Image (cartoon, rainbow, N blue to C red; front, side, top):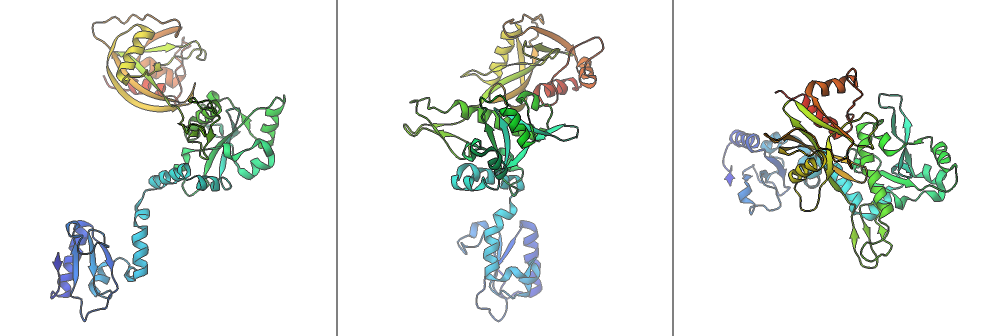
Length: 414
């Protein structure tokens, strides 16, 4: 504790300003009976909290609220009043939070506070899916389609009994705009009527596009939204009954879980980790083709992790199973959420062929129909031009993690 009693005003002011600049002092003023002169300015260190427990650490306390020293060192003289001081103390944390942190807290409240979530439906915006196909509208821009956001009022007026707000799910994109209207997603179940889908599309002025196709015609922001809502809504459709006792489960307002009223088991959405690896051998990389791929498309090797496996072990096993090669130096690159076939987390890796082993591929024909070794320059040419002359090969677009595994390796300096 430093007592400035008896010091000159110039000395007090100089010391306080220096301390404030060095340790980031924050000034707070307590309205008590004023002495004849300012003789009791104190510097409170973190170790001296017993002096004034109601004042935060690294703060200056001035007994005299009209002290010229304190007024001159305070950025806003209005802080001297007791009411404003309390307000500032209460809002300090909110003011210093980043927009991202505020967004996360807002999303957390939507998911954990059921009353708040229900109250947000009225002012919310809804991404609409028909039979898990997102409804999209044209943009006229480079990415030709976007999500068709609708209000609860619009959906209620048009869909009537087909729209149930309690079947909606909260979207993680609320993090991006915590002050904007809350975002939700809802799935419309198909009916036996032959033209039911066309009626929905006409009434909402949007087109129901298959999930896989949608990912390649929308922006990255919209793709992230679909990567969450498609598998989450699908999980709710498939998890209506408790796997423990068979009772019908109840969805919470945010769509984050389902609870069994009989045995109280809480069910959470399932996320399946998938290893996807680009195998390299010097200046060449191995790409493979699955029968379900679009014509001419090749990609990296991938497979689900099994219980008890590490990511590195899964990579080595999948490569050995699918192409009969042995790899080492497994390096994690990045991850990506993927909605197909169910909710998956793609864990992208690079791995090099083990020295001294053959690069001759032995395909698992139950999984793959072809494989090719490509040179770095071939990879770049395919990505830049679509496909090299005389070749029908093409690689996954930028929306897929396989694209970035290939591109990052091809651009590496030897």
